[in-house]
Length: 261
Image (cartoon, rainbow, N blue to C red; front, side):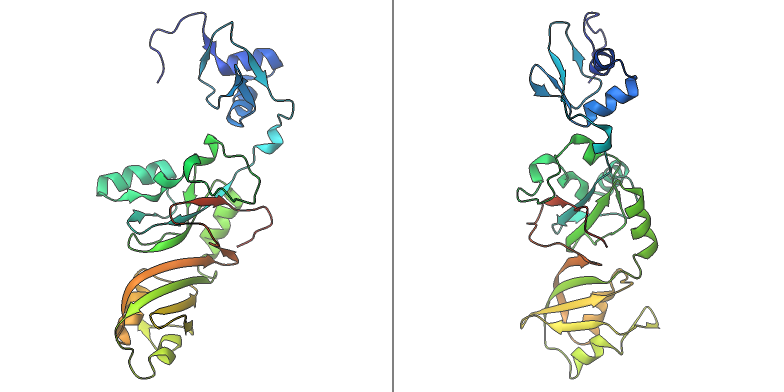
């Protein structure tokens, strides 16, 4: 919150950094949001923070704008959280609150970052801004949801999501109809249209593995219902070549530079 009557001796951190580095205010703001600036030894990521003349403002020696690249976050969404489509995270949160659902973006914070994340990326507050989701997942489902700041990845997901294979583990109950597994693989229709061949196999007595492209909302429950099964739980564990891996429910990790959908 901004002080309505700020002390005139206190100035914005961005202005102080710009003066120290003899750079533009926008460049100073990028250094601050990049986590390279500390005040009295504490990293401050808010360019609008106000500092006193006697406070020590330091810029890290390794400060570089080249490090301020956009990031992609891979979230293990729990059941009961909403993950929308192509809507900036802030707007999605507003829309979800108005509908009574809990936005999955509320789980994206420093506290829920996977401790064993192998990316080596420093968690910054700027990483939770201007995120978009192109991999929606029903509120009643769990699993991998992708949030990205990277326009290239956003374009890839928006344009190719129909051709990217998605893998889901589906817990079911009931007795499967004769030749039901074969029908799940090929021979069913959804919304009046025949479905293409799909890879379906048993993982256990109560869990099926689906690997399919161009999945539609409600498709897997409808397919299971057609062969006498009821879906108890659905979890997405892979999109294209990117797996959820060992990220616990409610936590997230960074997409690593070498990973490709």
